[in-house]
Amino acid sequence: MGIAENLQQIENQIPSHVKLIAVSKTKPNEMLLEAYNAGQRVFGENRPQELKQKQEELPKDIVWHFIGHPQSKQVKYFSSFVSLIHGVDGIKLLSVINKEGIKHNRVIDCLLQFHIANEETKFGLSMADAHELINSEAFKSLENVRVCGVMGMATNTDDENKIKEEFSALVDIFDSLKQTFFSENAAFSEISMGMSGDYKLAIEAGSTMVRVGSSIFGLRNYPK
Ligand SMILES: *Cc1c(COP(=O)(O)O)cnc(C)c1O
Image (cartoon, rainbow, N blue to C red; front, side, top):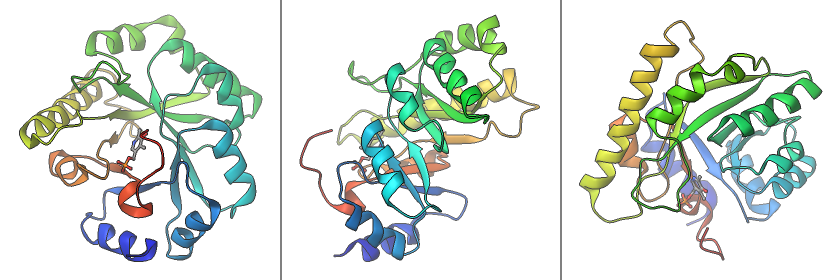
């Protein structure tokens, strides 16, 4: 099946309140344009220089999300235009993003990434880390970043119950943070979870944004 058909099939399975991020990392511009011409406007990338280059070359009404965990020195590649950074996990990175926001006279939206999987390789905060972060003076002084919710990745497993548990844990984290810190903040509203293999489970659990790559564009040549 082609990219337009894949997109249509996925859209048919996603309720209208859930946003589809088309994860186009490693894919050539022609493939992104195929998705664009089928109506897709939100794309996710996880390599800063690749994202910058695609932004320069592709239509300007594309909404770009950085879906990974950027290194501090790479934030500059996309800070002038990125719409949402999904993988933020600490004050150091938030401070860098804030500085970039000041430089470009904009407020940059971010999601806090939580560690919900078993795998050591996946980044993210614990609940205790998040409380410490949000309560810190350094965090409170950041005026050019806005925390809009949470992001997480489930364990890569066939065990659906395990995946469901992990997604439910992220929803609980969101609810608890909302109640404790963000009840007056309407922007704190997003739960980014779900990829090609598990987006249906994520939506059942309460996802508001799914990040789907290979089910739209086909398998990537490297395992990341
Ligand atoms: C690559 C990637 C995705 C998309 O993965 P697929 O399995 O191809 O859908 C989603 N989220 C993050 C953070 C990624 O790095």
